[in-house]
Image 1 (spheres, rainbow, N blue to C red):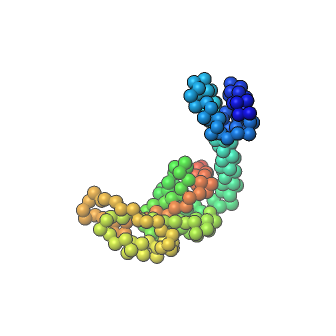
Image 2 (tube, rainbow, N blue to C red; image 1 turned 30 degrees about the horizontal axis):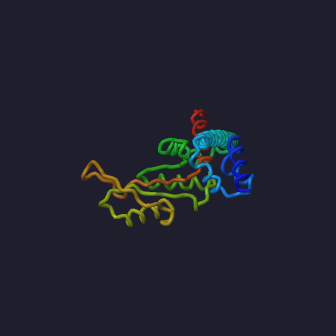
Image 3 (tube, rainbow, N blue to C red; image 1 turned 45 degrees about the vertical axis):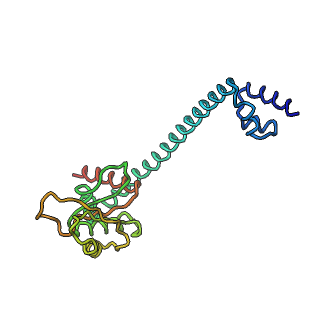
Length: 219
């Protein structure tokens, strides 16, 4: 019985069947199939062919998935662009809107790929206004608005955190760990470092970048 199954296994293997397929078809363990073919050169060659085929299928599948994902996100960001155009007509005369866009134009992160809506500055008043812009114009939940501080090693981390939290209206628990920097000048150092407000939202970033372009065209 076992000998007959081995003969069948050989025949199936020559049809380029994998160990798993042979084991399932003959109702035997995969380890048995592996043992039968472990020293057979032509079986190893088939194994290599099957591995290459599987890799090619996997690569093609991954490529198709990536293409589908690209199309999906393109559609999403196209919607964001359309939405931004429609909203611009309603918002362009709003002082907070124009101020927020101007601030982002001058101080904001313009790299769309990173998906970070981020403004950095040493002026707490500027960051406070941008925080209000995010909440009232962009409808961003306060829980999603984060901040962090770039500071010199000799500054007191807790004092800087207290200063920025109080003045820009973001609670301490929404701050990431401060980032230490080395200043080039020994005496002209920023008293409280540089603070950044950020929101991780690529959809919103697309809208803000579109608003900036439309805002520029208004003039």
